[in-house]
Amino acid sequence: MPQYAVLIYSAESAHTPGETADTSEAIAECDEHAEALITDAVMTAAWAFTPRSMARSVRADGVSEGPFYDTPDALVGFYVLEAPDLDTALATAATNSVVRQGGGLEVRPIHSGGFVGS
Image 1 (cartoon, rainbow, N blue to C red):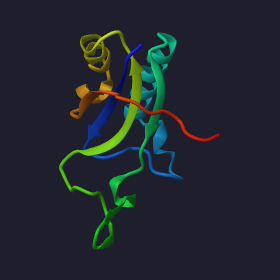
Image 2 (image 1 turned 90 degrees about the vertical axis):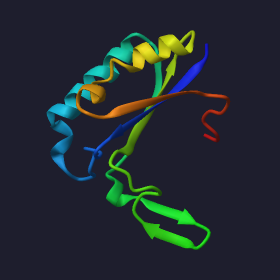
Image 3 (image 1 turned 135 degrees about the vertical axis):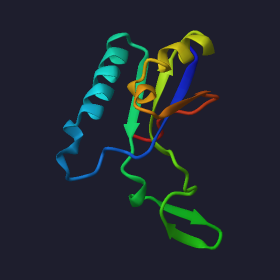
């Protein structure tokens, strides 16, 4: 079945290492959404990123602190969906609570790839 990457954009990631903020209402909504996608067997993988202040960017002139692009919304995570077509993937992604919370999503067909190594 075709796979689609759902890239999640929001003002900032709520996943700060060592903090108990992961119990926030926003995180709880995201977790409920993820559980529903797992139950429906359409989400195959998911990752949440730490806040953009923890990012480091690599360019030809070296490494700098912060995200590659400093924009109002940051890439805060992504997950992979299996869906029969793009319209179904879009409809499924649109149920993500980040949309109601003021963020947005980008849905892109996956060409190839997967886990490497063991």
